[in-house]
Length: 321
Image (cartoon, rainbow, N blue to C red; front, side, top):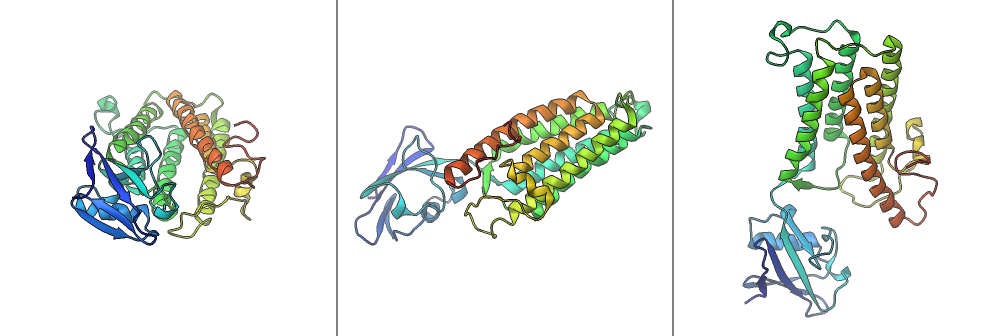
């Protein structure tokens, strides 16, 4: 009988993997014993586990050397793990998974469609006398074009540009992510497209300046995404230091580690100034806080992994943060 123990949590399992020869690992799964090469990866082990328990496909599995340790990466090799002749792997069920591409597309499609519902003033949104009417203010139409452009750009980048390193995420997260993006899109769209909406204080000059900022940052954001895509070939998980290219929009790499977030922030600041709308300002502030957290995490990762990482760089704001 294989060594198979049930922990006190119903979805936590402990399995013993024994190395009993110089050339093979002995893997005990329920009542069967399987030999694997020392060069086998964690993904190979997950595949073996999946054969015994079809419910838990590899993306749903989390394997650890210790219950409190970090999850082992799929590309980790058995013989390189910090274990002796016997190693205990702890399995936990991550729950149903969705691909990151599916999540990104859902996140972006929602705000795009929701905003257009308010822009065209569908029934039951405003007073019925405003059903299917349009605003006479140019800034309202420009804001709709900018908002739509932003999310169409994100959808196209998800389909054709991004190489997502993380394959999946828990199904439950899509409700949290989409709930935030969809609700904030509805909130800002309600006020910008409201029949009583008034234009910015400084008029067309403020709108034009903000539009140029928005457009500049959108182009910069796209340029950074392309540069990051070209940093590694398809299927590769080898990390490299991103450097500026001949594209002037990428020269900001001299100063920050995550310029895609810097440009994203700049675009939303431009949209905030253009519309002079409190819900947009709120969304921009929250987005900045979240992107700053992500950027600082990536910046620390770069510093930890690369000894020759440029010391002049900040995480998201040059010389500040």
